[in-house]
Length: 326
Image (spheres, rainbow, N blue to C red):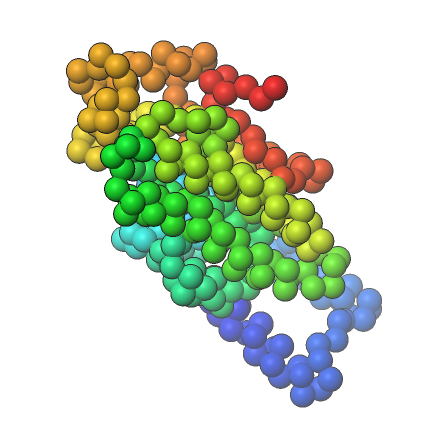
């Protein structure tokens, strides 16, 4: 509510200022008076006394934030001081994640929005809601994604199109609308660096057996990342991708009915596997560091992308050594 009131007040100030020739900055004397006003000084002291996170003061958006990697990323970014918008098709799930963040980090540190990243009207509506509520975006994490495994010889075109529409086209749509907002924030060219980070996959760095739709979309998304990075650097927007390994404990893998372990078992992707446990054991054996990727591993890589001012257009493996760049 406070953020919404501030956003409405800000919009009113901008609108009314046009009648007087546009907004004008305070002169130095008035600014110093405001900064040293007794109440303002007290509030500043309280603020400075609080432990600062690495993302303090930033507004972050995480798509696919209602579960899995997205939930862990949203929670970690909030713990680092960011105000986090949890965006997901599952609005109830997103609201639950946002409520949990607010309970731990304080009121108004997170809120939820509903979005279908494959639908441009839905993406545009999400951006409009975020701007109206918060005024802008500092970090956009494109995490929403889907997977349907299967042989190229038998996969239905509808399944291939669905995976591509969410993982590839959805990323394009999110960057299209997020970058427009960010560019407007930095219209004078003097603003802070802003970041777009796509949560890609190790399957975007190497082929994936009987998983062509997913790997193809992720490979393509790295091409988009590099292209967007070259274009948007003029707007002081950095664009990078992080490429996680397998999150074995998340529902994407472990759901007994729809998870990847079940899909891969049914698709015969692991020769000799007779159960979900067999498939899981096989994939665990492929990771040199002996465990699957966790949400906090991905979140740390995202924070690195934000803090590293001299990094754009990169695809960073977070795979426990399973994929190594040459």
